[in-house]
Length: 293
Image (tube, rainbow, N blue to C red):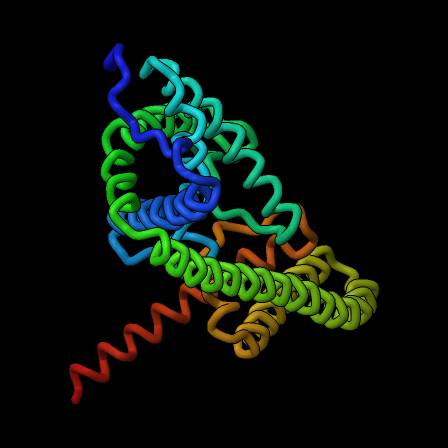
């Protein structure tokens, strides 16, 4: 790592108006870069297109926040090692707090490091924190001078116009995504209640049949029948719920990794699988139609 700090543009010499506008544009640009990185990495890893991010638009705000904080805080540091450690611990705080907040609000998670060594509740992990520490150096010394030069070349009037446009689109996206996630949770809750009601009705019949079964084999068959009934009714309710969801809701559901710590966690995860299966079947049907055409 270099011992001396490369020249990083000092935006603090500009007026407050330019300061706020430019920072927001940096946030949008780095959010887009983060989405590109996440999408390419996950698509190559799974060998299929994987549109990352919880929002509809092509941006991951956590990358934008992290990069902007990197520039604001670390541009005053005189050692690359200092930049590395600030970004290392900063990424841990940012990822953990974001994961915790989104899970508490929407009962869903968008990344899970549980299968990676040295993780904390699947929210953060050592390998990723080390990567973000190195990325902080790359952003500050390698990427940001060009980003700052780009925004400096744009007149203030056009910066403000672009910032207002991006702000309107971003705010609308956040509102639409939040509404979709709230609707998904309500639909999952209703689905679980519908399944429980049908299971309760079936359970009465199951109890009566079990009492009449003298042999253990008969009770075992009744139990198997009960489990099969529950699984069948669950998938039927999931299909029914999916048919009532619009595009923004299915997009939000598909972008999440899993649902945790709710009574409908299992149903939510199964619905994600059902959605992926339906998408695969639709794609296969489309390919078959093109071949027969």
